[in-house]
Length: 62
Image (cartoon, rainbow, N blue to C red; front, side, top):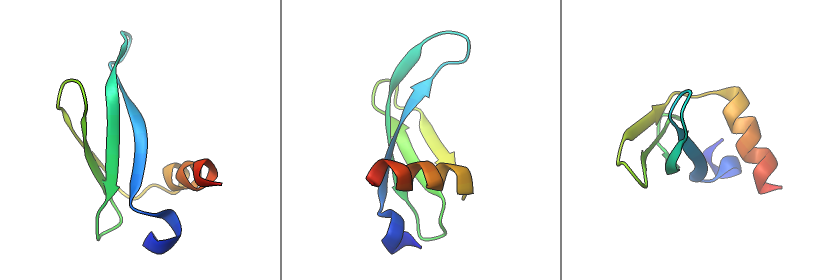
């Protein structure tokens, strides 16, 4: 499935009930999860495989 989705996705780091912090560039890992860092604060992000998120990535690519 990695070949279908590519290896990069972009999302926003949002601080709950406050504001947007920065952009997070996520890279797809070999196990199908996603990892990246916020461009502004440097916070690490890790996402497990998620069919809904992967559907959104596919929709943005089309």
